[in-house]
Image (cartoon, rainbow, N blue to C red; front, side, top):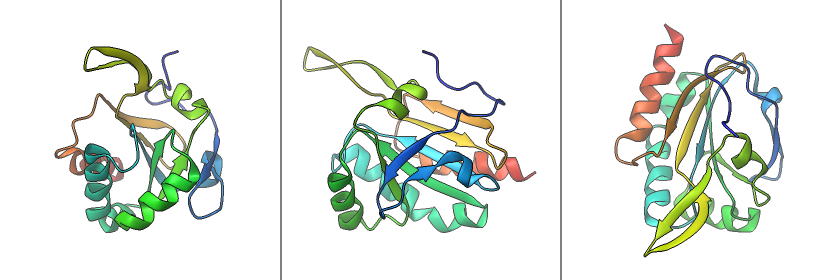
Length: 157
């Protein structure tokens, strides 16, 4: 699987979300959407990435952009993570990896010599018409949220 294609409409999806309402991509038309996939709630890199998007959240909203964090963690885990960190955006729960596979973010990883299948930190920018306008794979957290915001601003030009 290769994931969505740049400048093409992203296939619709529905995913369970914090806040009690499922999120459906088609319902978000008219707004830009940032989907950032991360490996695990409450781990250092994932926490920092969420904090960075939180810090810029108001600026994203000014650009008519919604942010959603996505991982395989349960909704209960997401609710705790979101509350503890004060994230102003929703987290999507993808325990069956359907959304992760749609965006091709599940790959073989290695930790302490042990190989396993895991989420590769990745971000996708979908425009107000539902087209993929940006993708970042194998993301390094530092400076990433700001780079995504710059790409969102470019869409407005």
